[in-house]
Image (cartoon, rainbow, N blue to C red; front, top):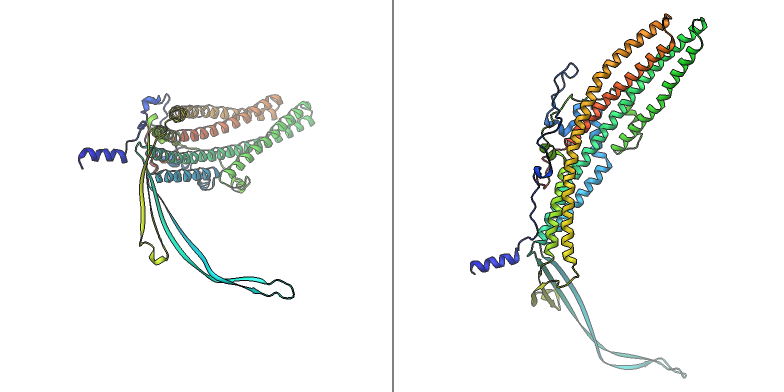
Amino acid sequence: MNRASAAAIALLLGGCAVGPNYHAPPAGALGVPAGYAEPVTAAPRTAATIGRPDPAPSDLAAWWRTFDDPLLTDLVARATVGNLQIAQSAARLVQAREALVQAGADRFPTLSGSAGASHNVTRGGGSSIVVGGGNGSPGTVVTTGGSSGTTQLSLGLDASWQADIFGGVRRGIEAARADEAAAGFDLEAVRTAIAGEVATNYIDARLAQTRLRIALTTLRTQDDNLQIAGWRVQAGLVSALDVEQARGQRAQTAASIPAIETSYAQAVARLGILVGQAPGALRGEMEASRPIPRGPDGIAVGIPAETLRRRPDVRRAERQLAAATARIGVAQAALYPALSIGGNLNTSAASIGSLGSLLTGSLFAGLAHTIFDGGRRRSQVRSARAGADIALAGYRQTVLTGLEDVENAMQALAAAKARQVQLAIALDASNNAALYARSQYRSGLIDFLTLLQSEQALLSARDQLAAAQADQALSLVQLYLALGGGWQSDTNYRAGTPG
């Protein structure tokens, strides 16, 4: 056999895969900038952060540990195991892996076997006699004679195989492999989202506890003010207006408590669902009041291209684009002739021991090609190309949305930190003003309205500072998620690397 004949046979049996070969779009083609508009770097050490570990890229894999809250860490671990959304995503990954196995099976021949047995009976020769009868009654005619029979056993084996001349099967496997990787990244994206939701609701619960403590502390102060106002009215120093103002102020503070308790209960109920339990399962564990978690003052965000490699949703979108591109080749391969090769092998005998003594077989090949289908197959190619365009636009949208998430989280974190600085000053000033106002009211130097305004300012300053602390923690959670936190970028999926 000469070299040309060998090449022709290789082309016939191995074929060449039609359709475009996939290449991940470079970062520049996706509109990824060289750097972020507002980079955030690690903040200098302060007295409050001494003893905390320096944030490092490895912290992204288990970013919730940087909040130094054992219960938060435990809840995230339990959610990773018990969350039902994660369970659904894991099952979808299993489906995608089985789809890859099914696609790969098309590369191999299909074998089927059959077995049969038959028994033929032959009757012949004999005589007839009359049984019974008499007294005018007819008798029964019975025929007697001999019979003989033969048994025939058979075995068969059929094989068929369709040659992947134009690579339709290979493109199908390529698409299934990309789908499997996309399902894996989807699982990681769900895991990171659930970890973020656990942290968010945990912070909300601790904020509610903090606000409840502030409200109860304020109520005790307002009870004292109401008592003092009552004494002063009894002494004839002030009018009953002071008492009514004190009562109204206390009632407004008390009215805020049910709403705070509702916020706390909703956050705890959501945490129960996130870990795969009943809504009230975590009430006992969360009952002990703890401060709002505080993470590191700053984290190194790196460059946008690194962020995209770390985010599982971006990697999922890239794999979906690869799958859509491969399906163009699947559709194009259907435009060309299909070569099928088949054969069978049969044997038959009168006994089991004689099976195989006589074998018959056949081998055949067929070439099929659709001449006219009303444009269906070419329409399928155009549809597959449109699907790839959709996947590309979705990939670019996911990339840009990821960059937006990082920018927004950095801005929110910076704003929350700036607000805390000013609100801390406001709280200190409001606390001093309230102390002076109480002292002066007891001495009769100011009216109750001035004291009332001072107390309201103090309550507002405490509440706003607590909210700003929670906002900083929540912004930090969002930044970790935006950077792809909670997922190791070296996860063993069959995936390309974008950019």
